[in-house]
Amino acid sequence: MKAKDGLPIGEMSKQSGVNIETIRYYEKIGVMPAPRRSANGYRLYGADHLKRLSFVRRSRELGFSLDEIRGLLRLVDGHAYTCAQVRQLTLDHLAEIRRKIADLKRLKRVMEEMAAQCSGDRAPECPIIDALFAGRRPCPTSKRTAITF
Amino acid sequence: MKAKDGLPIGEMSKQSGVNIETIRYYEKIGVMPAPRRSANGYRLYGADHLKRLSFVRRSRELGFSLDEIRGLLRLVDGHAYTCAQVRQLTLDHLAEIRRKIADLKRLKRVMEEMAAQCSGDRAPECPIIDALFAGRRPCPTSKRTAITF
DNA sequence: CTAGGCCCTGTAGCCGCTACAGGGTCAAGA
DNA sequence: TCTTGACCCTGTAGCGGCTACAGGGCCTAG
Image 1: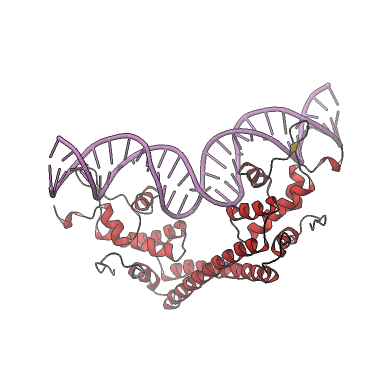
Image 2 (image 1 turned 90 degrees about the vertical axis):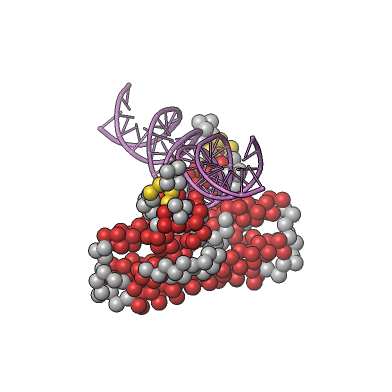
């Protein structure tokens, strides 16, 4: 009973960089298949499990949701995927990333403007607080009753 | 009993752009103070509540966590804040935003490289899938047993 | 024989909401 | 008068993606 038997979960964790609890969680939600068990009930993983787990980790690092990863894995598992399908998932995800970057950049600009207004030495009045209280709504569904503080 | 009595929660929601359930949630977690109630138990808000709620919404839009917002509100409530304190919170948050942008940009670059590898017309082998399976770990705590698929 | 290290299951918590279920209240219309 | 519908209430459960227990079992070394 040596290494050929399979990796215990702790070893999987070390090799893949995924937390033990997370591995069990992936099994519970069906992202990882249930491995076989040793006589005493311990999980024993093979090389294919490790490959799959690393796939999941890398996809997570690239910001894919577990649901998107399930989609990728379904394609892989079915051996029926076309490159075009995978490419499309990737491009969709890329569009999402670009949107997030654009959002954050807008945020950054606003925050920088606010910070620039503020010298930092004035006492109770602070232009940042003022801006947060007085800022106007971006989506004007309501008739703003001019609350400017 | 007209408008002077106070705004019911639905009106607060419309004027502030914050969901009714979210307003009640903010009350529960102590971000919003409990308003007075009408005879039948309905919440009745005043102009100060609306100002505060809008403050919270705008701060959330700028990506402040509710905990950070609690910090800002504590300063405001205590009337003892200095501009420097507020400015520091803002700068901290700004640093966080910049970090997130940098992260997403790295992600974007990797995803673009992967997508560029893939023409979309090859059948079962897909360079994106290959890349996800074969990518190397960024943090080499384990001695990679060369699983390259 | 005991101490430590690994493993197991199951549940609860995190954030910031959102979505019910199951009720009460009130005004307008038939 | 009855009913419909809009609004309000409380309380609980769910989302995603984990993480952190509690409370056990197993196995080996000293």
